[in-house]
Length: 126
Image (cartoon, rainbow, N blue to C red):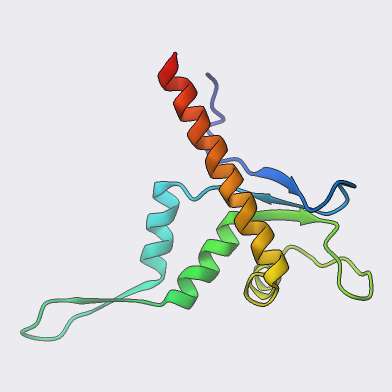
């Protein structure tokens, strides 16, 4: 089995429809990446005489996750037919405001997770 040490967690492409014009590339969030996102979105509050309290900024965490998971896209256009760039801002805008887009990403993540689970099961059989 080969691994690309420069890209241990490559993205996979999913198409919105059969014509293959509109697509997204997504990846799963590995343990190290999840820990980094958790750290970036969590604040530790220390008060004298009390145990430290962790406060998670859920909005920030969700935005960091969306930015990590969605790595690229093509064929995504606005109502005028102009291409929408794959930026952090646009990822968050579409994920937060478009049920259709967010559902597609969620469904694709589910399919990707199934692929990973199947791969693990196939390895166990051998």
